[in-house]
Length: 359
Image (cartoon, rainbow, N blue to C red; front, side):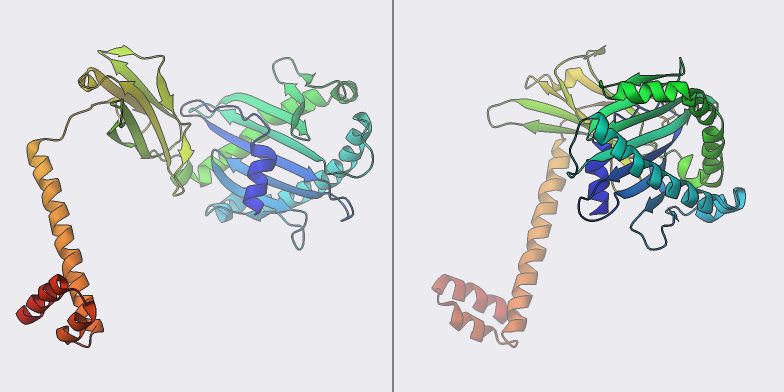
């Protein structure tokens, strides 16, 4: 349930910046939700290095403490003593800040008391493959809509709605933009580098994709070729369709890279083709784990391959039939005649009697 809440509440509302090939990022997502009649708003925070959840905090959790969620958490404590305790103190402080801010925003939006409202904050930084600073990001959302964001290039705040102009003026007056920029370019990068150091076996590994081509023929003759990549890490990958060596920019269908559930990722790209012209199309795959781009072309199964397929199916059917016969015999107490007399069908009886006699 908590994972579902996280996904719906903030991952679907804040526009996450994309990650460059070979780069790494540190992100914190903070969310507070009002609970009319149930006390203070519920607050929770999660921290990610790349796509790995490394820690979380829930205001409803007993003791209100941050909890590490990665194998390298102990190494992180040795690298930075008191790391988890510092995150606990910081999260408790943000719990109170968000409670006050929610009341302020309700006034800015002329909302009456009561009702469910949500405040969200995403902050983080990204480094290059050489671990140099690439960019930072900080943005807020209110009730599922963009509210205000930091422009790190100009050190100014960008208001996404009229009520956010009030917040913009307040934060410009106290110089918060410069303070946040210093954090993003300094302490955020240092913290990310420490995670990459102690968790390098997971975070800095490269698993090349396994790729296969799938041909699907629809009932009305339409043919689709699908290029499927699986088992790769990190998530950044490029799947490109080409026809006679020319890259296709249209008439393609694809899914965004998605987690496979085992620490790796998967992605596919498909293209519609005219039956008989499949050989004109190739799929080019580029990934950090590949020494060079991989190119695949659809090849129809050979006749020997078909014989292997047919033989495999036949062998499988024999195993199923033998297993079914054994199960029947076992459940009839080893007396094949008992099962046959219960069948009530002449042709079925004859078949079972002959099998029993051979046994």
